[in-house]
Image (tube, rainbow over the protein chains, first blue to last red):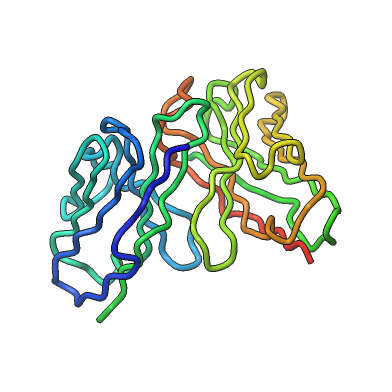
Length: 109
Length: 121
């Protein structure tokens, strides 16, 4: 089973600041790494797929990078609506049971 | 517009059973793998089960194998999760989810339902 580790668990920042979130995989997942955002009381929303591709409608302030086992989600300048929990997910394993990371909460400092 | 609407959640005693339903609309249901993902209160996301387009292929996370069964009815555009021998640790919001690409088991999830809460107590 591929285990994903996210750091930090919580990131306290102010609006306008840059956020850098990390996701590390226990095995090589190539670039098959996905990022989701979840706001309180809502279902998750697809942000980034295949490590660096923004999903439809996602603002350019969100960017992803990395390959293999180390990945980064960057929010260049935090907007009020960006304070949420962010999950990474791998989509390489077979059988196709695609584990999620434990999440990083971005909250207002 | 793609919509996924779950139902069937509720309060059940340990050892009991529950059947969740997910009614899909706005896309060709029979072209897509479909997934169940859950989230315990205040916790992270957990992949539960998935099923291919014709229902012949199913996969489960280890913690639910032998207890949960995923199924689908393309005539009704519906996905189901039969949950037996429920445990307290199965308490969660259960989301029905659809991948972004048809005929692709590993595509990222681009549509989620609103979730249905299952409480085992």
